[in-house]
Length: 299
Image 1 (spheres, rainbow, N blue to C red):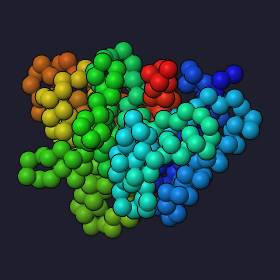
Image 2: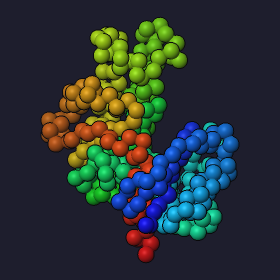
Image 3: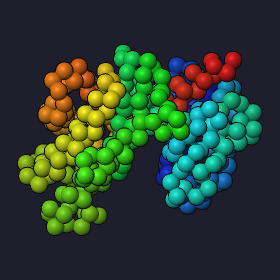
Image 4: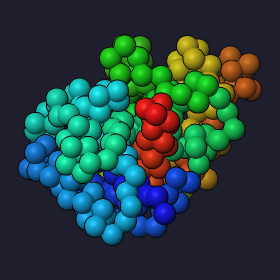
């Protein structure tokens, strides 16, 4: 059976697995990426080791990589990575893996891969225009039109976290989980390290006014960002992911209400808001979908 190695590279964790062309995984594992501690060279060596270990026992057709950073998907290289990822900017990742393993390798940005994964097998199925947003410590995004990623002139399209919200700051400054924790901790007179998102939702569900107000404020700003996206792109669906969106039952009616308050009725009526379904597998699944698409174009 033909199989593919799928890898999702983050600053702290490296998720990887083995899947067939239908996206069915026969193996999934997680190890520390050590990208921040040991840098790009050690990371590349670790990825090569993973691929070779699989090649020893399986017929590997290709390597599909999802990674943090701005990626040139045509070259499979890292255009830009945060300064705390030493040596990662400029890494020709696809070339290094292909040369070492002897198989075709593709590389795409992690949020783009999450969006592709949801389009293929998750909450994005059935529509031809889609925006995915991941809400966590920061806010990431991607745009898909007619089933294809919109990359932009320098491959940074969809970076919705940088959207300006009036004079108050960026969307990421106002609607991330990090800001929610800061706001609630300050209102309660607590150190930020003593508060996390799960605790805030537990308080809110118990009726704590400070926690409820903090969540509603976050959703207000998140909805403003979503409104800006809709006025420019008018996607059929917005898919929301990230750890905080696991609180779907609590959040869904509040997001719908907050969104309806900041957009014209036609947009509110015709924009479907959904929650990501693939969880931690979204990056690897989307990386494989990207790889399969590019494999066809390479032939």
